[in-house]
Structure formats: structure tokens, C-alpha cells
Image (tube, rainbow, N blue to C red; front, side, top):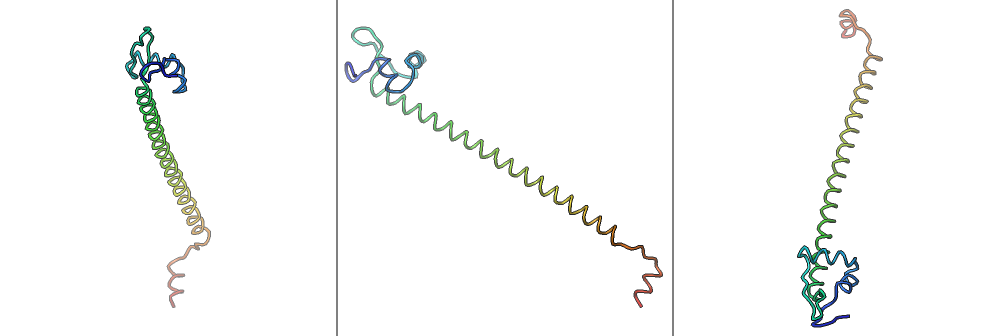
Length: 120
């Protein structure tokens, strides 16, 4: 429940942001979320500061996830390219072996005399 001037205690802010109040304290200590002293001396957080922190956090998470997705897509594309190159190389080897095997199997030794006889 908001106390003075639409402000919340650290515990209330943690509940609103669905995180641990120690996390909120750490973020306040680091200056990532704006806090101020209440009339009774406790640290309080303005609702606007909570909203800004939430938006910044979600923007950061979204950016991180999009970066991760880009990385995964690049790795997936690289894996597909490697697989295709490997498949093409293997097919070329098999094709070359079949051609070579076929030539050896069906090629008859011809002498110059045999070639001349065929021409006539």
C-alpha cells in the first residue's frame, strides 16, 4: 500500500516487481533504482521509480533474449551450412568412386589394332 506521495517501502516494491527485497536494496545501493528516506527514516521508492526500473529491466531482458536468439540463429545457420557442405563432399566422393569403379569395370583394354578394326 502506498504510504506518502505515492511511495512504497522496499518490501512493497519487491512484491510489486516480484523479486526479493534484498535485490531491491542492492539495486538501490548501486543506484539502479531511485530511493529516498520516508518521514520515519525508512527507505521508500516512488511509484514512478518502480515503473522505470521495471521497464528498464524488461527492456534489458528483451534485448538479452533477442541477442541470444540472433546468436542461436547464426549458430544454427552455420551448423546447416556445415552439414550441407559435408553432405555435398560425401556425395561427390561417392559419385567419384562410382564413376571410377564403373570405368574400371567396363573399360576393356584396346590395342591400336582393335581401334583401327572398329573404325572400318
